Image 1 (cartoon, one colour):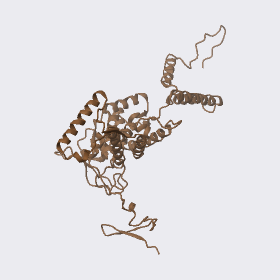
Image 2 (spheres, one colour):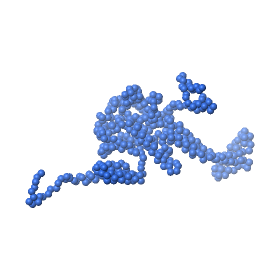
Image 3 (cartoon, helix red, strand yellow):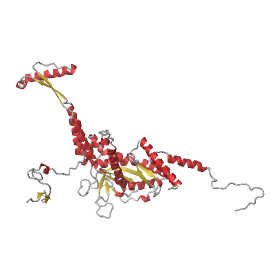
Image 4 (cartoon, helix red, strand yellow):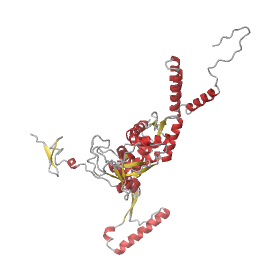
Length: 461
């Protein structure tokens, strides 16, 4: 009868281990070599992370690329033309786009970073109310690293939006004033999400560095590349067999003679490529084979690429391998992941900053003002032409069927052709056309003055 397997932990608790067991093959028993493999929590300090980021090109790209792509095309504000111009000018004034990218890179590298929203208020320990911000009320936006902020007490009220997170933060860089900051004044960016923050006691209120679970694969790839590079120096090794070499090596005079002899031989070979040797010496060469090394390096690169969740075509900048391979599917999947990062991470984090930004730019908060993230996937000229043809055919069919009023269909058609890129600038051209043609038509709708015919009776309305 099989008994349940148990294991005694270091703290004295007994854990039952259920699973496949084979006594003959030692599978699932104490003699199973795989039973000794366990996962342990090994946190890397900031200096180790910085060394990896600055010393390994792949580690740097794994950290930088998703953050760069998330901000590369940025976002398109949807509002009136003058409102869009004012909001974008406010964004440029505070350098929002670059600071968001910097904060995201620091969060991926160290596990967290933040943007401090400055509105000129002296009591920053109080909750930020965006509704009181007037035109020009956004004074500054400062990027803070994780080391700049120290967490205060953890919020234990489940009704609070900051539950299981710090109730506030202390600016560690300002020791003299002991400045406390309310979480609503910080745009928080975290690294890899921690499922249970109570178990991640190393960095309270933050996430894990991206390299935490990826660095081993990166280190293996770097070590493989370094060994292959070292092997290049050993690609061809000359060998010389000397009669009675070991027996005579104990003689210091013979040892000095051997060293002098082969130093001269190498110098002679380096000058004219000819090696002069004694007829009793056996001369040979050992060459290293590099045939399988590219495959080995590719496998380690694929492991690092998979661990980073970035396709090799984007991570390494290489062309897709295989017949008829375009790499479009890999890039589309990756761009979908970046789009999910934008909507699930960046957009919620930027929500309160955007409220302050809109009010500071416009002096109010119009409900219709919103934004859309630009697509990372760029269509070719031919694809845009094909899209424009399909859209034109759709507009033609709708016009002929008269299902939609002409004015509404015309406005929708202009928007569709402009946003798809089939006819860039069409919206502005149409607006200019109507503006020029309607400005001089002041008497529209009025009947012309007509002289009554002789003998005709004039009746006043």
